[in-house]
Length: 424
Image (cartoon, rainbow, N blue to C red; front, side, top):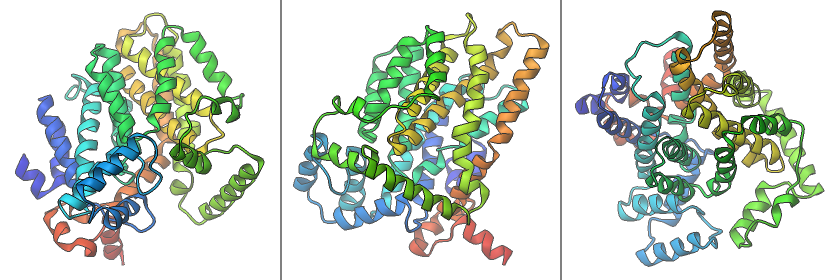
């Protein structure tokens, strides 16, 4: 199996779910993402390219003294240059300073992302990896495997932290083992915004048995707006946080006007994009996931729902409600919606596994499955959007001999690039 992955990561990945042992699955899942990180294509203007340039410009000659001094600044929220999260700081230092190979940032990121993504997948699928699955369930699993998984390598921090956070919270909810609290804390070190995202999750966890309140808040959030001033007094004062607030929060009429102008320019740019790039993610988060949430609420409100389903739906609703309340920060709102979508999609998969345990009539069961199919069809633009990113950001040598990608360096070919050459 190891030789197969080194020969063709793609073929190795196709054989992953034939494995039954959890440790073996986790090992090869981690290896697969590490290999993907090693053949990452740096496209100018993307987050991945920016992180590479920062590693090249600031870390190649960084000493241990500089590293620890910068670490102290980050941990005390006084770092306003280069990076502001300790995770990226450590990875950049190891890659660029210790190994003198800045491109290794995505290899190490791949290993971390791959580990927590693999553990999260196993947590959701549990002992059902090789069991027979319905078409809606297969579709839901494919969607879960695609969204913010491989493509998460580009941003390095945000979505890696999401999988750390998902694994930590869901594991704690199902086992109550305190070690998973440290996993949750780790997500904050990967991306500091999870210290904020943790708050609605705690509220949802405490209210998960008060289902009517959660659902009521969820519905209310679509018709309620709040201003930044409501939260401002609770935010600690620091140069870093003030700088982040400056660029991410609409807290004045001038900023609202500027944001409207930027949004208008983005909408004009979308006119020249493919439909799935222009609206795939937006329609998925604003319409598909909302539709799925009400389908899940139908089961969630029943008295006999199992604890895993209750937790996943409760957190998904809590996070989505929070995202509606923080519309004054479009960046935080969009990211929180995506995290909420991950919990709700996991809930849908879990529900498919346990649906037979609920006393549901044939007509109702048919209605639920039609709802899942409608959700999957509406999510096709999002799938195409994720696939387009994968085709652009990874080497063609993922299919065969990734070692050639390492040798070619900047002269490497993306999957999309090779397809373009073949078509022409």
